[in-house]
Image 1 (cartoon, rainbow, N blue to C red):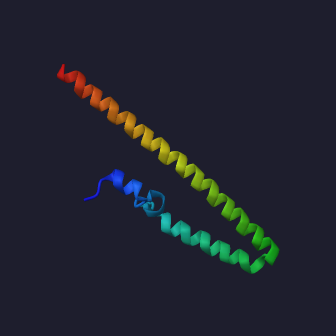
Image 2: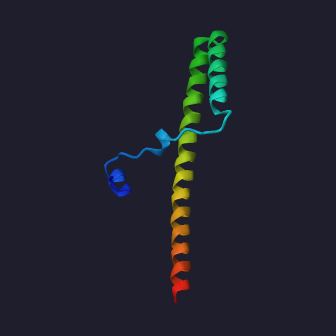
Image 3: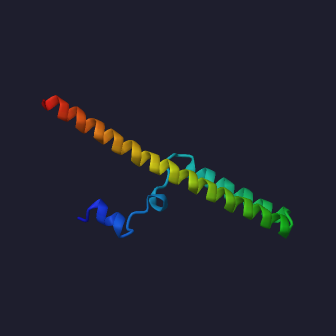
Length: 94
């Protein structure tokens, strides 16, 4: 089994692309958004729909930036937690 470090180095780990929310309402919400967008395509002009697509794309970029920041903070927190637990164990041995 490859180490996590090797997988990271080789670009084999993509949490943002592989993690899917397990919330029971996730798929339903995604489907509803898709239906609403399709409905808007029928009533908006081509120019209005293009603007809507641009807003959706910009929002996706914002969400991606937020997810990167949250992921990085999670990594930092996990490392800090590991250090603290290690130090507690180290102090208990003394």
